[in-house]
Every structure is written in structure tokens, then in C-alpha cells.
Length: 251
Image 1: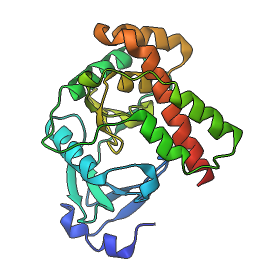
Image 2: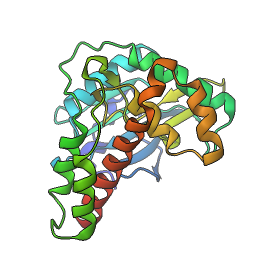
Image 3: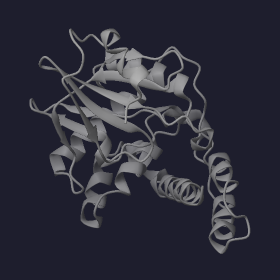
Image 4: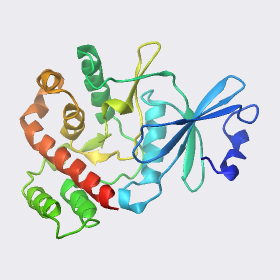
């Protein structure tokens, strides 16, 4: 439920009158999302999970989201609280990418990611260290469990990606975080894990979510200069995801 003190701030969201209806939108693992309607206007309100264990930098996410909205890559924000515990953005009607996206969707997604990697937001952004992030998540778990011990060993053997190639990355471009609107435009949502990182990590994160019969085709769309490190990138993404899930399954 949305706290009453937040709903009382509706006049700051660009609405002409109080909300007519509020619909909970299910599917996110971290935050709570609500579709709010008021006299024909639709906005999306997101209650942000403020747990520090998630490793999310909300101030960075805000700066990145605002930059990406100006670039036309993500819906524009209408309002954010000073504490960044919630914000409101434009609601874009559309459909998420399917679990098995079409070939055209995959090619379009690679083009959007390439555009993301070329962006230079005016913000001080942290650089993702995958091994350090895995260690942070695993430190929240039972250090004596076989799964944690095994993961720590695998993490220690990860091959670093070239640091000089780091750029802005989304780092969670799963099919559920893509939206195709009624005009066919592809939007990329939810920038909370974005950081400076090797661009291959974005392609690996999406590739690992695809059916096996789509993965090889998707790799052919990836910029040629990144293909040599894709195996290392997939290993990093896989262990980062496993570490995150293990931490939050036990927390």
C-alpha cells in the first residue's frame, strides 16, 4: 500500500486532481510499483526499497534516469522525494519483451544498449567491481554453507574484463525491463543497478535470459569487438546474479 503521506503529495506529480484509481503492478523483485490514474492521466509511482544490502545508489540512479529520459531512452520522471524513497514517472502503455523475444526485438535491443554505452551523464558514478559486489552479497549469507563456499571459490577465479573499456551500463537489461510501446519504440526501464562497467556485461545479462536457440543469434548482433570477452562476461553476470539471489533468499 502507498502511505497516506505520499498520496497527499499528488499535486506535485503534475496531476489536476487526486488519484481516481490506484493499481498495484506486480513483477518487480526490489520495489513496489503502482499505476495511478487521475482524470485520464496515468503515471507510475515507485516505492523504492531503501535496504543498503541491495547495493543500490539511489542518487546515481536518479541522475542516470534523468539523463536517459532526456536522451529518449526511458520514461521521464515527474517527481522524486527529497529522500529518494519514491518517485513518479510517466506511464508508457506497452508490452514487455517476451521471454523469447523476436529476432527484430533482439537486434533493436542491442542498438539501444550501444546507445546507452555512448552516454556520458554529468554525475559521479561508481564503477562496478563484480568480485567485490559478489563478496558483499555473500557476506550476508551463512559463510559455512556449501553453496556460499562454492560461489566464493568461483568468484575468486573470475577473469577481469578490460578496465579501460568501462562505460555507463544498465546491468539489468532483462526482458522484463524492456517495454515496446504502441508505436513500436523500445524503452529501457529501471536503472537502479546502473554503473560504470564493461559493456559486455549488459549483453551477457540479456543473453543469459534468452532460450538457448536465441543465444547464438543474439551474439551475432553484439558489437564484434566485444565478442572475444563474452564468455568471461557471462561468467561474471552468472555469479553476480547467484550471489544476489542467495543473499536475498537468506536475508
